[in-house]
Length: 189
Image (cartoon, rainbow, N blue to C red; front, top):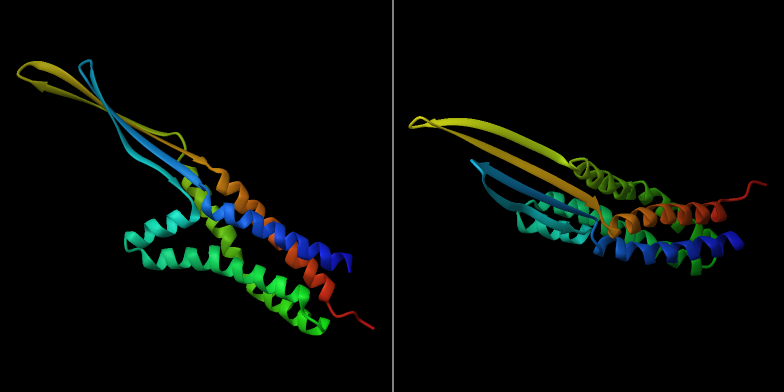
């Protein structure tokens, strides 16, 4: 019975981690450009974004990337919420055989919620651009004057709090469902 209570408690903790995980900044991305010409310089901020999972879905939706937005929303928001709801319902259902079937169903859709981990992996791939610098120098000759034009960009990315909350949610949710599945596993006679 302790395993059942522990699984339910971890499910509630996972929900507590889930909401900040989808609402807080998952990553930030900044890209600056600098142009130097004969001692004069010009700098511009090209990209400055702090994105959470829900903000990413919204941005993708606004830019007509509907399939990607829908997939991220389904796999990172809908399925985790459905999974947590069903595990909570299973905790209160009697008889245990019905609850066991519900927990097994959650385990089956839990494979689909591995897309949560995929989303985190995509964010990490984006972060691999951290400190990517490019620089080019061009020499021009105009009316006998030599002019050097240096163009450079710098891309900085960093994980935000949402990344840590969402990652913790993934692990705690997985542990909760495993404990409940173990508890409701039919005992061999």
